[in-house]
Image (cartoon, rainbow, N blue to C red; front, side, top):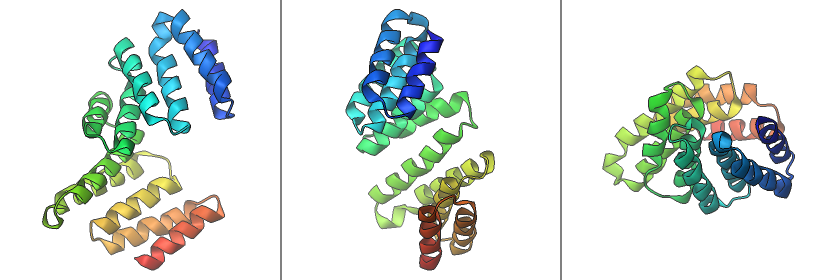
Length: 193
């Protein structure tokens, strides 16, 4: 059971999609106590393949098996945001009610609030943009230094009209970047700020 899930996760990381899929499905059928994890793994596979509707179906089954599966709730919120569906914030809040320091869900909430701000009339965007910034700041505060979180923090500070904070975050993103693409993004962002 658990060994099969570990093997399926390794197959997923190495891009062996069909083998990972088959092992997740086999585990879900054979191991009722691990069903939620198998379906969550299957959902992650679908996300990586860009099949977000299939991922949501797998997440429905995962949450049916275990409504408290933290990662499934987070992944559901992420998929819903990427599909532009309502309910992303509610799914992420369900995860955060269980664990308020879950960095993935916190960072995703920043993106949900940013998307919400874009849908609001110009004069009503400030509250959502400030919420996005607070979520990004919290994610950076909780996580080990990661360039993508610094970049998110910089973007949210920029959108919240705080160029000084955006500059600091993008500088940290540039310094933490491990590849030229990450450094180039941060340099370009600093130039815009």
